[in-house]
Length: 94
Picture 1 (cartoon, rainbow, N blue to C red):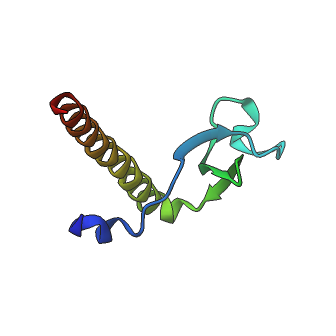
Picture 2 (cartoon, rainbow, N blue to C red):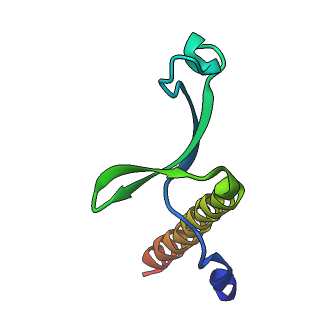
């Protein structure tokens, strides 16, 4: 529980890389083969899926912050599992 402070920068959702054409007819991507990379974070905002572009300079940071959330969720699931087993054991002892 004391280490939860280190997770204060976590982000929800997932960070993805998309390949896309920019639409300019003279660009190298116009052939459909050498596409541009675009990084995005996909999250739920007020229950609705939203996608936000992430600048290339921030991709590493955003990925780390999203991974923090995944580790937090895994830790929470572990704690909940332990507490459920404790409850079931207490119930049997009654």
